[in-house]
Image (cartoon, rainbow over all chains, first blue to last red; front, side, top):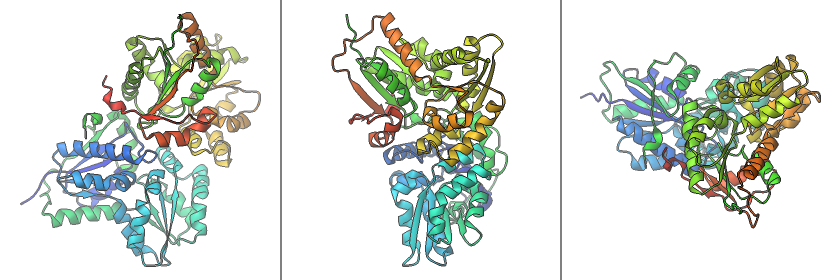
Length: 272
Length: 272
């Protein structure tokens, strides 16, 4: 028996589209409803209590759309709010921290793993704990917050001299620590891959959790008998800011043109 | 008869503190209640309709505190929401665009004026129109959005090599246009004054509207018989994110230590 309800995916804004594209590629017959909380973005500079409140509202909206699964396509929200969401949800909740941590643990050869993320994620300590849990015994984990990276990604400065200088400023301590694996722990960061790779060198494996998250989505659907039968899956987009603004910035993150028809969602109506 | 009600001041977050400090210096006997909408900051990347909605909520909260005046200490909110707020308010509403425009018009000698601001402010066209209205006939106005400046100011990178490179990237067209006056059209930008001055040179007058706004506040109080008699004026702070987070980042913008006791305000309860 097929379950043709869509998968609900949310993020603070557009970064989660780098996860959504991997879900589309992994399970193309599944419908998706994406909510970007652009009206209150970013989450990475905000406090834990605020992020939990916003994430619960985001989930409430998606649940109202009758989704069969919630994907928290935002590292900061995953780090701070996953437990709160899981407790409240009636459907499976997927977060993006553990899949990235697992990839890093498998990739490292020298047991020296770097994590770059927002201030919120770094301060939570959740990412570091997740990598420590998965990594070989005796591994060393190095964290670095990179607040400018989100602005650079949104400004479209993915690989210029300024981005090179910012990358150098943030990543020098990780390079000097001799890491061989670096987790891109924010959904915006994959857009800066060329500049990060150039600075860190080919000897360092960059972990973009998007694919690993999509694999968890696929497995959870299969294990829970939640697969759809793939007839005209819905691909809907909602934002808490203006749809035109969302559509004007989304494509580089989604890696392709966005289907028209993004709708506005008045997210603060969803009380928690 | 003295009016000892406080002045209400709001901003998307901490930038408005660069205006508040000027108000404190100009009318030290006046009480102030500051609201920073940190939970939804920044405003500069968001759409007009969202900024109007948020600004109306911010004003509603301040009105509930029985203020005698509203100061919109945010250029983006001033550009997009001033008309909507003025229409709704029962007390005088002060915005920050016109005072800055007036200063620039008085300062220019060659009639070539630059404005740097957020994307939201630039796209609104309000700043450009205000400067055009005040400036000598035949003046030429050049605008430039500088989205990275807010992140640089909040990261504390006020005057380093990366900031120099970003300043050069954004301001080269204005320098080449031969401006002699530059409006710092976002309340975050005064923190970057050293880097901006270094690049533009001493021949260019930098306009920080803060002082001019404080002068408008003083005059409006005097003209409306709204002056207080200066007995223990209140200086209260509210934020829509966590007070500890607000207090940890506020001081550089306020130019001094923040009094303790910032309170949380659940801003989305203020329906409009």
